Image 1 (cartoon, rainbow, N blue to C red):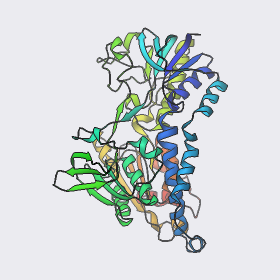
Image 2 (cartoon, rainbow, N blue to C red):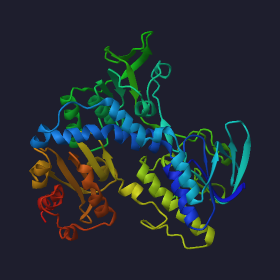
Image 3 (tube, rainbow, N blue to C red):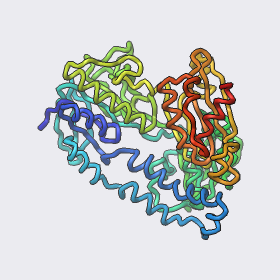
Image 4 (cartoon, rainbow, N blue to C red):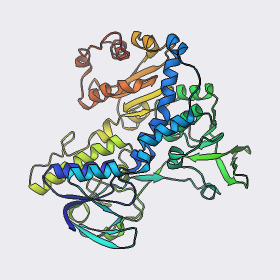
Length: 477
């Protein structure tokens, strides 16, 4: 069979969800994948990354409770951590994911997919053979993104790590240098420090520069206390690996950092360089611009070639996190079904077929020590968006539930209130296990709950969620 209602290029979590929604809507779907079914999140990001972090987080939690700490002896076992990581990455085998596709009624076509013409995808298999798939209604690009290496002389020749090598490594390096202060770099500094590596963290543009400053400052302080050398503003100018295997990183200030491995975590680039975009007049290797229902658009904002091409997930650059890509996938699958069957398209803000939360309520947890949980705007992003907001902050350590959660609990939380609507537009918390606070904030922002109504959402006592009451009281409610 070479003709389907929908053809999806990319069988990561986004592509899988697009195809699943399409099939649930009564259409047929094929997904094209050149690597492992399940994509980056399953094998080189979300799942194995959090597996690397979880044991150390649990041990820290135990040590913050005196009686429990007395029952725990010894240190973290790196080999056991890596073995558990392997299980969560399914041993880098995709049999389970392939089985799920089959059960869902989705056809898998192995190979590299490229747009070959109107609603046509040419798939080249590993043996060089090619088959052309035709889509009756839509083609969806869900190819994700890859690590982007900065143009530092020698970097590409030094066999450096990206997130893939770091997450799948079979050893813990004695000395690890990390270039890039974003989420990947910060989480991996936390993980490998706990596993025993001597970490040098080179953060030219700061550590977690897009979160609230008080939250990033708490993470920097914790990293330094744990023995990580944090070098904010450090700029690599050259990288070489010598015959012994050591890597030398020359910095702009004249210092040289020496490490056994170097992880480069300086951003992502779209996987669109070999997708046949030129066939549609689009630029290969660029992020794919989309409209409100994620149809790929041209420079004038018009759907290309009549609107049969969609892009979901990282490749459209709206929100580079897996859960948001899956959210987009559900909207895309549903809108394709609606258009194919002649049903109404709900494309107004917060409509069923429009992923509005991409611009207003993207939740994210940074699994460092302490954790950072955030959704919606920060003070800086609200100002850039032209919103008049009031920031309300409170000491998490002063909440009874937090004091019970761990001795010496320290943290902070803040909410941003839109002065014009009196509604929540942003929330950030930093502290142990604050990720579990996040969904309440996400609901409040997406539902546009006024503070006067939020006052009636009474938090159970004594829980860390009592922070909501304290924030509202601080806000004058």
